[in-house]
Length: 217
Image: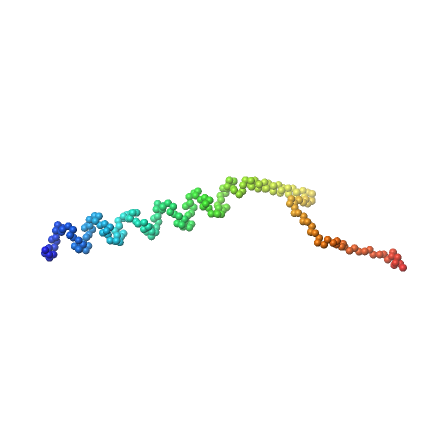
């Protein structure tokens, strides 16, 4: 029985022995979607690199399907990474842009001594009446008391000076207030020439010729 002896469409499924139709018997593009049984196509049947976006069903790429380190910055859509996507302690100092942290981003009560730079607390940063006696380390209570006593003494001295000026005006005299801390009088410098010095030259008295006996003769 040759091919020429068989009429067209004379051979049906019943006439074909199971397992006898192979690749050679199949015409190109003859295996359509309807001819493929469900779950008949496994990974071995799919050529590498042939599954693209069109072949993937929506939401079919789950976490298990993504290889480690496969998702880089180019694969992440801008603005899609939120708090839920960030791991704990993942935002380090290097990840924060300069001037990105403003007052609204800092939780109240979290800035302590360690967070303050040296000399960063200026006079403008200190609220009025916010420094109590307990906060003063360098200026103690005793130092403040001593300063108060000094101010009192200075006031008393000014009052005494005013009274002295009043007495001076009434008596029309100058009262010299002694210096409480006078400069010491320096010792006299020794004379390098101990010999007595001549005194001033005195004029000798002139003789009266009228009484001089030698002049009469």
